[in-house]
Image (cartoon, rainbow, N blue to C red; front, side, top):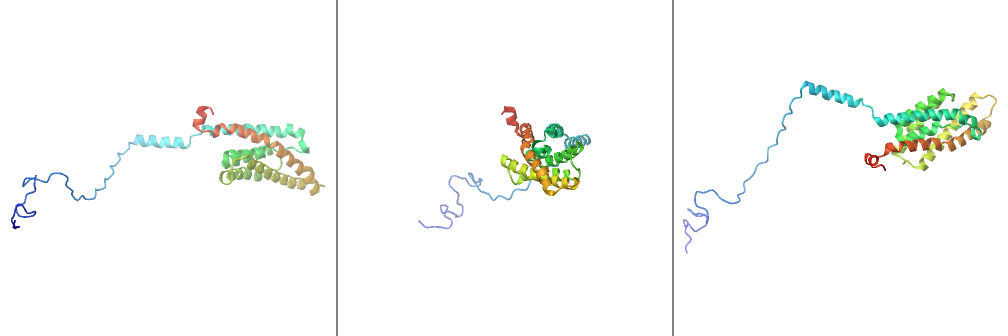
Length: 243
């Protein structure tokens, strides 16, 4: 068979029609076309809020920003009660008993316990309040105690948050270090206020008995804070399940 240019059976020749598709009809089946990139859809403009809705939203924002948390109010009430209870116990009962020949400081380990349990904000605030309360009840000079109580509460909270975990050994180290610092302040105050007393007598008769009494009685405020703050550290699921 001769291949003629106008042979209708030759693919691509003049008058060639594909089998199964009549001439003049569009192609059937799956046809691929070159698609252009989709145009980005512009977001629809938001409907303008009414003046009343704007004012209501602004009022709700102010109300939420100035709202008082119920847990913070409960914590503040508990801490206020403990400050009064510990300060009165320290200045009345323990001042008469005088274990080891000295009156133990209950508010300093209480500040440590609050800083470890509730972190630096509560520790600093409770430290400042405790310093002025104990001074008003007949403590030492007010210019020295805030310099110890406030940094102790803040430092214990920061160290527990970023460096050490909340454990018995860490709390014991905090209590020991703060008790030593408290004894150093007692040495400075006693050596400058009591006449005809030597540094050796101040350390043996004032600082050392106070250090022993502070370490032993520090268990009381730590237990109070630990037991009362435990419900606040539970999640919502734990509170509802009663665990």
